[in-house]
Amino acid sequence: MMKKPLLLLALTAGLATRAAAQNAPIFPKGELATADNHTGNVWLKELSEPDANFTYSIAVATFEPGAKLDWHLHPAGQILLVTEGTGYYQERGQPIQVLKKGEVIKCLPNVEHWHGAAPQSSFTYVATTPIQKGKTVWLKRVTAQEYSLGK
Amino acid sequence: MMKKPLLLLALTAGLATRAAAQNAPIFPKGELATADNHTGNVWLKELSEPDANFTYSIAVATFEPGAKLDWHLHPAGQILLVTEGTGYYQERGQPIQVLKKGEVIKCLPNVEHWHGAAPQSSFTYVATTPIQKGKTVWLKRVTAQEYSLGK
Image (tube, rainbow over all chains, first blue to last red; front, top):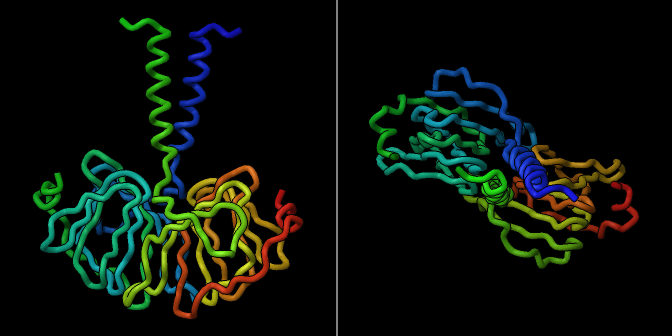
């Protein structure tokens, strides 16, 4: 029979492997975003491009802790499905909402807003974005003061 | 200082708690499906209903091992994003495709197909379904012989 410390070590190693596997992101993280519309590191991965049948894109965005998009709006709106971590979402004139894994946000057409990771947590969502009314309109950078109100 | 067996036990317990938390589904599992269009237990949760801005529904489907939908088709197609487990997807006249976490499938409009869990694994996906051309059309049950070809 295995001695107790060895047995516990084997169990620990097994659980550590399992925890690491479960910690892996669901979808590929994609490429580091290079557009000048965010602060901090953001990775983007397109999961499904719009085409003749599907008039919306589906993409994953992953933010390092503290990373955030600039203020922007979507001419036809966007739906966010949070898959990992904790983030912030704010519409112009409204308080910051804290978003957790499993939450769903409908950003309505032409509503100015921003989203990103909380200061101490990475943040990942799947975004579905109807494209029939044109591209995202990028606005001002989120200031440190605006971001600090989420704390 | 903690003795080694106690230290390992504490570490094991910590990892077990972490593994359990990470094993929790991302989205709520929803309700057991009661419609007569599947075999085995299937849970459904609507994440986003279609409305004037978004002409597609977003829903999560969770299958126990071996559970599967009947053959069916979508008048405007459907996109599946696999979030957990291993499943099967088959279009009429094609071999069964095995689907893993992270894979994306576009079911084109009016293409007869079925999907469900593999025999030994649960299976969860997020489905986006354009609704402007009407509801899913349900067809025949998947036979044991058809399902067995996925093994």
